[in-house]
Structure formats: C-alpha cells, structure tokens
Length: 269
Image (cartoon, rainbow, N blue to C red; front, side):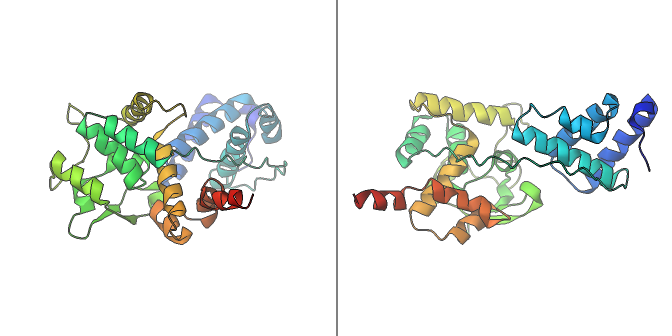
C-alpha cells in the first residue's frame, strides 16, 4: 500500500501502529526494541513528512539514535506497508566503544563489602556466571543443575539458550542462601520478581562502598567476567559461547581491553 503521510486520519494512524505492534510480536523482538520502533513510527506518522525528511530531522542526534530511526522505518515499510524502503542515506556507523572493566581486586571488594546475602549473590551471578541483567532477574532454581555444576540460561537475549558453569564460590553462597527446587531465585520482599532498577542500584551501591570511581553497571561485571577469562588464557570461542554472542566480533572487543598481551609489549621496553 502506498502511504500518504500528510492525509492520514487519526484512526488510520492508530490502525497502522496496531499492525506494527503485531509484526513486532510475531518476530518476538525485545521489549526495548519494540518500544523504540513504535515510538519512532508514531512520530513519523504524526510528522506528515516524507521518510527522507523525517530522517533528516534526526541529523543532530547521536549515531545510535539515527540508526534506530532508520531501521524502525525500514521495518515499518517492509513488514507493515509491504513496500520497499528505498532511502539510501549514508548510514552512520556505530561508534565502537571499549567496555569498562574492573580488576579482580575491585570485584572481590564489591562482593565482600555487601552484607546482604541476596545482594551479594546478585553481584556474583553477574560476575562469576557473566549473566545479563535480564537473565539474573528471570533466573529460576530449576535452571541451576547442582549435579553437573552448570546453569542453563533459558530466558536470554534473542531467545538463544546457553549453558554456563556454576562457579564453586557461587555454589557455596547459594547453599548458604538456601537452595529451593522451583521458582525465581531472586524475589522482592513482596514476593514478586526483582525490579531491574533495584539490581542496578545494588551494583551502584556496592561500587560506591568499595570506593570505585568508575561508572559501574551490571553489564560492567559481565564485561569483567569475559576479560578476566581472556586474560587467564581461555579460548575466545569458549568465551563467545559462555556470553551467548551470535557473532564472534562481539566477543573480540575484549581483546582490546585484556591486559595480558599489553603487559608483554610493555616488557619489550
């Protein structure tokens, strides 16, 4: 269908957004991606602008925002309107940003300084298992195989399941915490699933108490997990599997921050 943006009625815009939501759900896109695409398309439909003029209005935005707007419109045209998206604007490359990594000593200090055993466990799952924030709050007791010392990650990014090792230190604290057979590992005082913002605050508080000046987020502990494995001599392919990266390029970013080889170069001087 050919879309005449300027003459769309409110009901027609509402119908198109509804179809967009259906297509996003069918492809099981993440909540964050779906929310972003819907927001962009709503603004586009209200703007009355051509797709090119609309994208040009993003020219003063960040690289990631421009890319997101472009792919949102591309998705909308191809999957809702069933039209070819012909815009050939020079797509700004995503800026490569090196991850923040903590030292082993900083990680240990963050964990040891937390008096609350549940909060300490959250930090340990982020670091000793390299879990994402979503994976921690969705983790269930039945996902932890204590006989084989592995954790089966089922609710992962892109719905790609994977298995990671259960570190002895993590297992020891879980036994102290109290192992159960079923249900969520982490629940709030009201018995509901842990809020992601709560986990982020736990990490920030631990970093502040440990006197760490870097900006520490849950993902920084995952970055540190991967970097420390690489520095310890682990094969990058195994690290890719543990992190659940589809593309090896995503894992190779850690070769830029691992200091094992950097130290060797320093010794040449």
